[in-house]
Image 1: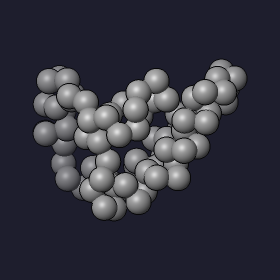
Image 2: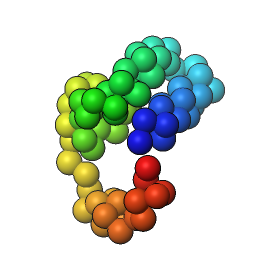
Image 3: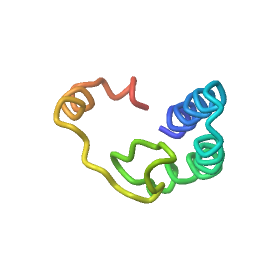
Image 4: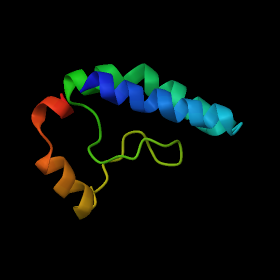
Amino acid sequence: MAGPHVRTHVGMLGYALRHHDRREVLGQVLRLIVAAPGTWTGRYPVGNTGGANVSALLPMPIPDDLQAILGAAPTEVLA
């Protein structure tokens, strides 16, 4: 899951750059540094939305509607 995790933060960085949001750009650059190692070691906060407006270390609940989708997704799509 390290690849999808990093790609998500790259997308969020692109969004921040397009919107000239310096705080989000910095937050995403920092998250890009730790995204892959955090995924490989299992030390990422489950459910965290990944935006700079929340702590990068804060676990968050996954909404029921998304949990149902994630639970039903084939494992090869998530890997």
